[in-house]
Image 1 (tube, rainbow, N blue to C red):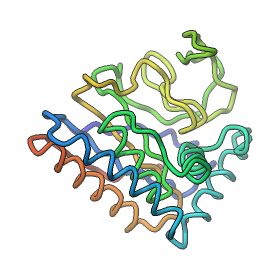
Image 2: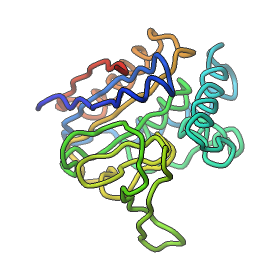
Image 3: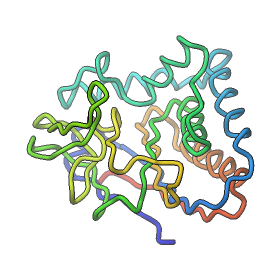
Image 4: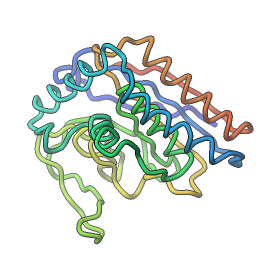
Length: 229
């Protein structure tokens, strides 16, 4: 398995100075304990109601500031970690989706960090964090129907050679590269701003890997830290 490393547009440094991301590449093996992943997600939902890292709120607020810089309204379209946390606090839980998704949602909740997961086999070219020119295409679902959108000019997006894979940085993932139950090669990215100590970013990655090794002991996992240029 080859470690998948993203390309980061140099303009990102103007929007989010000192942006860092931890990339994890997972080659899945048979899942032996799906209940474990559900338990980890439940514990993560409980943990944010009982205690929190001292920097967590500042980190989520910083993402809101970054969104405003590229013209998005964080109250309307929040970063993925803020949206997930708000839902967990309101409902007391997050529904289980899939063992792999449950684990990365648990890490996002516990560490107040946006976590994305994509099917490597569905990518065309290199995942790239860049600024949209407004002509890119994004496949999504509206009112239960598949549809195609275009991002706003100046919006921060993740894309590959075909089109947008995630809009508004980490707000909403597209259909084409999303994780399905039969997905076997997965690329994760944990995205942090300076308000999140780098040691905690690395701790989040290690905890995520530990959980995957428990439910898939024969899986192959690699990781790499990436900085904005």
